[in-house]
Amino acid sequence: MPELVKSDLYVQFPTGACGNLYFVIGGTLWSSNGTNAGTNPVNDPFLATVGSFYNLTGSNNKLFFSAYSYKTGRELFVGNACSQSTNSPTASRPAPDDLQIQRVEKANQGIYPNPTRDILHLNFYRQNTERIRISVTDITGRTLIDQYVTSREGNNNVAVSVSSLPPGNYFIKLSGNKKQVYHFIKLD
Image 1 (spheres, rainbow, N blue to C red):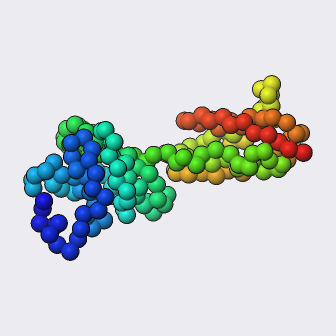
Image 2 (image 1 turned 90 degrees about the vertical axis):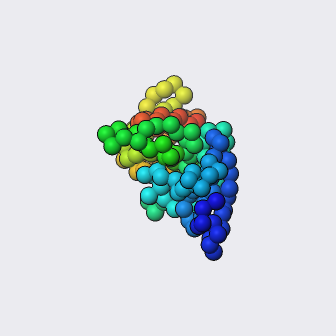
Image 3 (image 1 turned 180 degrees about the vertical axis):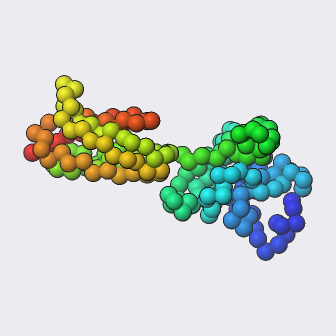
């Protein structure tokens, strides 16, 4: 292990992925192939925007962890621990020790309350800002509500008024880069 480990700092959340050991020291994500020369902080451009790493877990070729981003708060991230790309100044690919880290979509996507009387809340995740069409249809496919919103990067919550709809079964559809459809019941 490098000399850094012998200081007052300690190793947190050690886990294996793709034949390497990953761990956190002093708030920095490290990887090790078991040699002094192969034990270094992970060099991934995405890590410049996150910190406070927690609960590293390796699974096959992936490294999962939670981290904090000022923009979106604490979220789940995943990295490819077996990245074999080249380090070329002209290439847009990451260096060999990059994990190609990205956010994992939140599990709390969906609608609530369901059934509802007046307002239906939509929870959804988007990796980028985009224009999204929200439409409500009845069971015959007839569009009854049609509106557009601009999502933000990360988790989104949009309230849709369904108070003008008669009681019954409906579908709400989010269109954009990722399409989602949910069934809901409108109460009297």
